[in-house]
Length: 142
Image (cartoon, rainbow, N blue to C red; front, side):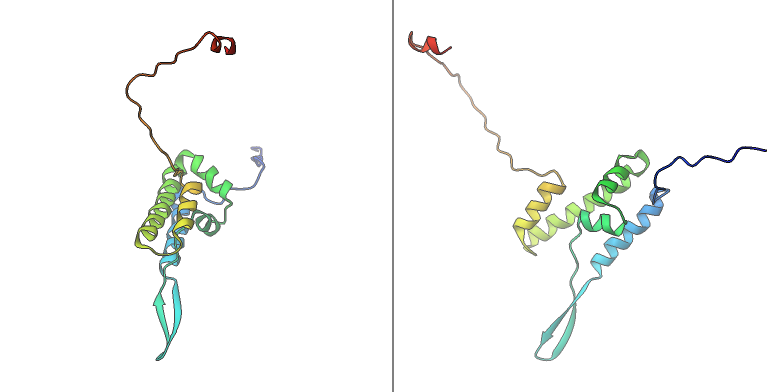
């Protein structure tokens, strides 16, 4: 009689395959896109499409993962492309909203810096030479 397999320990994985995860990712983006808002007008209440911005935090919640858990899945070779593609879609959505003037621009910038690796960077180029001259008194400082 063969011995039963021993459980490896730890919590079981939530997603066995990238396709399983992709179903939940697609549902998250669909839910964001289908959000509506009711506006009161003189004629009455009107329902308008009001898509929610995509966020990595929202994606993690929809997948029932923590931010750390999402990063752990991204580190797995078989899930890497799936998670990176979803994160890129969140990033592109934020950029589009920001450029369209939708929402709070500094908030989008903050999110892009903290969740997508954006940074303020200045590149200063110097041409020519620099000559430093030391007087006898200055040599004591060395």
